[in-house]
Image (cartoon, rainbow, N blue to C red; front, side, top):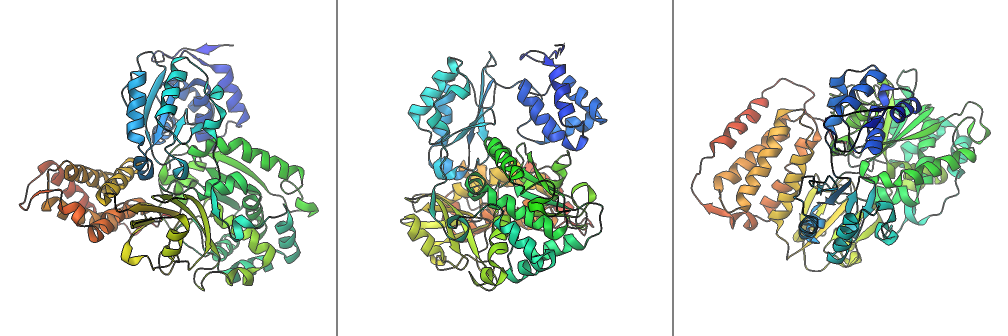
Length: 607
């Protein structure tokens, strides 16, 4: 087997034959670039420049394009990393459980600095964004593939010993990788057993037109956060002209504190895939794609097995359930660590083998989506709900919840409560009810919908979860009165600064400025001027950013200043103006961007 040397590599040369086999398996399709890079890195450990050049040549792309894509995603590496690549989840709930001390302990035991590779190339350790395991953290990823939950000092010591002994990760104790569904309250979606194929049969009996009518009658709204009417989205996609129509499942739940889709994919994959198949019948699609977040890579083999079983049961493939002409199949695309790809146009860019930069809209994906064709993009929970609607009808679904927010909603509950996990309720349920059920005590705040959502203080706990009151993508993080809400907001500020795609100046600069100002306040060097600048940044980013990430980045800042201002006041060094020339100069750049004449500068993030 021939090899190609990489002068910068300490991990050895990469194997040309193995790369060629990978490229052949992927049909040398440039739209599969992200998947090719992911699998090539899995073979070699990282992506040497000459390997990227070989991929570019084979796909008919420029090296600059391949390097640009590889540099966009956090899980791709253009230089050697440790053979054990350890990433600690750094969501606020992991912080509350002591992840920082555990990371430092592992670094000390292994003699490596955070963010660096040990001299012998054996190990590197760093933080990652939320890994979707807030109900059983602290958690970490090893080599982007293996998940270790419920970390403590003893387990960290064992991990260090196993790494020093060069024990393969596959041979680590199996119970470390145990991930439980942790369903604490089930309702329609989680508590109703379904027979695979029953919803497809019901939809076929109705026909595509009547099935679309049922979806409209149900008033099902997207469960990813934006809340767009699913029936209307399918109708627009169906009516749009195109050589092909596509059905895409957004399984990139990167919002910190959200892990409901993890449970649906792990234990309810059949209803999810069945809902996609019903959507395909309605919109006339022959191909479906699931965009699985990189942190859920460990679910890939399970999901592939479910898809294969469904093919064998004639629930996917040609002539589904014997209906001539009803041909539809699903493939899975694994992301590589980019929160912004939860936005539907960014997700489509990634599916096409590009950087996950949000598109300017219009046109919208229902008209010009994947490969320029009409595409409906819906959330995992939305497709699961569609399966139940196909079985029971739109009127039935509309009778659950509230008139404007029909059906049930699954919540990912974590933080300061006795029983974290998954809770499903009809829309209209009060925040107080959820707090009582999860065993929360002395609660001062709940972050609903993740960092981009809303922070609810104690006097608002009578409010209800609904699009017309408190909307949510599913996260429900609980904070008792021992928690510093300033530190909660600061954690979220660093998350947005880390996850900004960097495409537009207001977001790239603005999120960094917010994080810097929050750090300045945390260090005790802040003044009221810093708080005023934070308000100014909030206003600028709301009016000038390219997509919803930048517009939502200051949501936790705005809420916590308004509702927990003493947490900020106690950090002010003085009441006097303190100039900070370097930051204010950057701020002027962001302010200038608000005057650009871009009618598509305000995009809603649909996760």
